[in-house]
Each structure stands twice: as structure tokens, then as C-alpha cells.
Image (cartoon, rainbow, N blue to C red):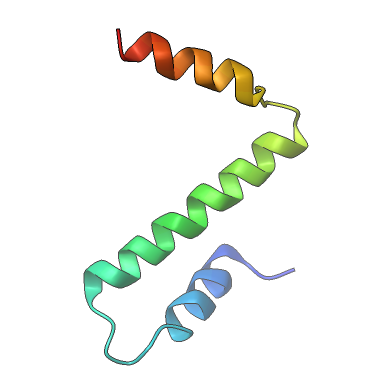
Length: 61
């Protein structure tokens, strides 16, 4: 298993040479959010689509 530093280095190196700092940061943030979501799913910290729709509707009121 690779270390976090190795994983992030690989992600950065996989970006196009002309990537901006903001594009790289956005990619790293996206990767972190996906990893967090996968961990939440594995730990059964999930809600149904119906519950999410209900919560969104309550925010719009």
C-alpha cells in the first residue's frame, strides 16, 4: 500500500504539464472527497435518495 504522500504525488504527476495550481488543488480536493465518500459508504454512514431529497427541500423553504 502506498503512503498518502506517494498517492498524492502520483495524482499530481498524472496531471497535464500545463495544469494551473488551482486545477491541481481542485483535483486533489476531488480525490479527497471521493475517498471520504467511499469510507462513509463502507462504514454504512449513508442516507437514501429520498431522505436526501427531503433534506434539500427543507433547505429551500
